[in-house]
Image (cartoon, rainbow over all chains, first blue to last red; front, side, top):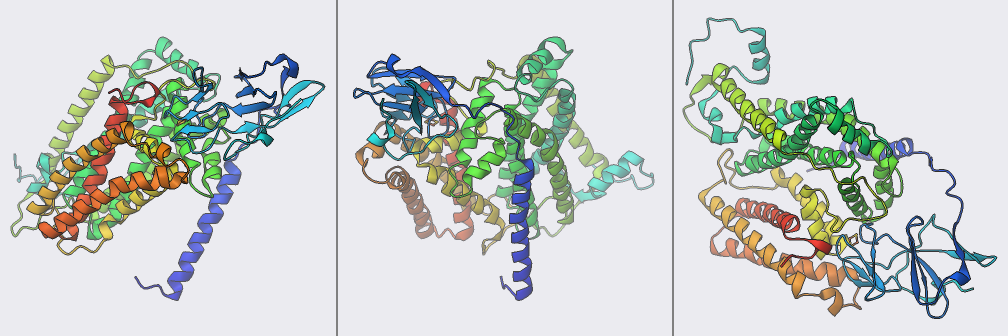
Length: 153
Length: 428
Ligand code: FES
């Protein structure tokens, strides 16, 4: 197929218009966030109330709170990073299993077996007056577990 | 039944209308049922049934998270024939997917997509996409567990597209997760935009068929023409009656499924995609998402859209499988692809664990490229074998490729549908 100047200009214009249309459409069909009160942090309660080496599910906050042996807290999203199913806890390994396509995660949320390709996302924790406040608005992606993700008293 | 002495009568207005859809006379070979199996017509009929039942359903359906599920229950318990209409809608949608897929297969293997029909093939593929899209958007509306998780799984796949994936998924869902916004989006698409687009494409599709001179037939010196009314029309009415009767009968005894109300905090085990997407979900189990959600779907789509335009050296328009060799290669490659896909999946399930063996390699290679090569290399070798041993030329090889793709997809779909139980593990 030969591409002369007219055709080239015509196609460029069409391509540009398509991109523009996409953005316009995207802008106009986007919805205003109607859920109110999401600006608040999730309060999980007194930090000292959690035992070491234990896992606490917070279904309403959509995360698992893990306190490790050294006292560090990690709040992991319960959404599988593969396609977003809710993972189950696995009491044998202390980790998580996904019911949808059988991904497995260890207790740090790292992938033990595919198809998931990255560890479970985590939420930042701050401690104020001894209470654990968890920011559930935006999950943080990570490629592996490291100490800096933990929060200490 | 050939009636030829109709000329003296002026056609009634209904007959005139029919003559706008069909020409007055057509080739007698075109009305043989095993030429087309009436599949395109069945699709059009199903679309009409879907529109009518859908319009009725709109009277009782409320597209909000709080009321969607209850409105379906109300439909079931308090409306006269409510459940029946819902069943009819559900069954027609299922049948439409099957019928449109078979129509696509029929059109391709009778080699009716080339030259001026190429454009119509594109419209057909777009409509196939719309059929899937409308089924999928309708899937969410009952807002039960099945619907919720199936849609969660599929919309997350979109996020794997590099660069634009996230914002695209956001547009589709209207939010970060599947919620009321998604329901509203899907409702609008399902009951407004998709049907409208579909009507437009359908008109183009029909008009282009007529413009190309009706359905594609093999070249022949002598043509025998017959009147469309009543020869073709009577057959169409008969087929329509059979389909409608079958649908009504099934809808009276088979209820459209409705699980518990959607619960975003608990995934059912196993969570499966809608059945027609199960092949894609199966692919996701074995391949890195970059391959299974991006490269392979796009390559396949490109391949199908390009089908009429590759350089062929022996077109045999209207002839099933192009040639005897084509027939042989189609049948053989479909069977081999089916068995091979099955065996490969079985091996990957139970013996090959590249993700563990090569755990310090990047995932794209260990769980993406390597399993992909396990499939691609034997397929390439198989095609080469046909090329060298049997002198299969490009037309036949492309036909083999199409057969391999279709047959592998069906194999994966069946495995996922029938052989996967709890935790999506194979049941044997
Ligand atoms: S969603 Fe968890 S494995 Fe697919």
